[in-house]
Image 1 (cartoon, rainbow, N blue to C red):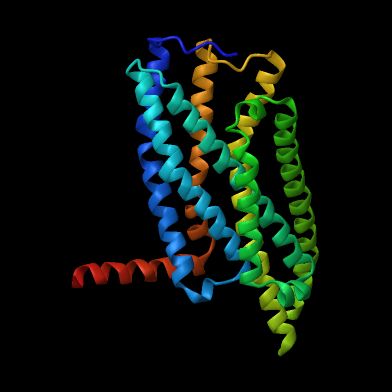
Image 2 (cartoon, rainbow, N blue to C red):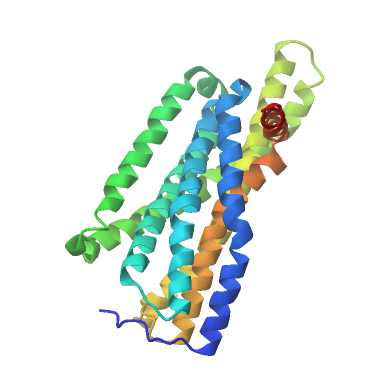
Length: 305
């Protein structure tokens, strides 16, 4: 059982909290507005209604939950600590919602990886069988599965159970291994197809159409690979800290190092939710163009009114 946090905080901890509160303003705004704009663009633009974009929509919803629920709880919690009012309730709400949203992101990123592998390795099968409706069902199923699984983290006896903790770690390990294996295979397949696609582009007819389709799938895979890369960069410090706590046998905030490192790692994890909409627009000219058209239309409607 962890002892309560000692208050008032030491000077170094106070400085770190003030810096975190200041640095979190821009990412918090970007998380909400960036993901809202992307989700609205995805829903309003018919040309973006593709199976792979359905999973991006699910990932966007999890990022919005971070922006609307997790980040405000995090900021309130830090501010209360800074004022000398430690709130176990706010900390518990933050940790539970963060656990749910983080696991939800893991579900969708793993789903993205498998989806890209099927699209690249079996393009004809993917074109015939993949539909937006099917992807919506699969994405909703993943969300409901994680909602049910993470709900056990609220129940005291379950969340302290070694079996439940082992199941969580097993789930994370399976997701990570799946993503790494799948994207290593995707890289090999894409590398082997580059020369073939270049040759197909010189031919007229169906072969050129095939080349254009495969080039589009490669571009999507690069977009998803960047999302996966930033996802791993955000979660690596957290996994390292978990390993450190497991080795040291102490995960409590009973010293300044544990407290400060926890807060900075939480900050890095939350940053991932504001990076994704930037990646969508930077790496996809189509999404960037559609978002620009949507924003221009929204601006014109506001001026008319």
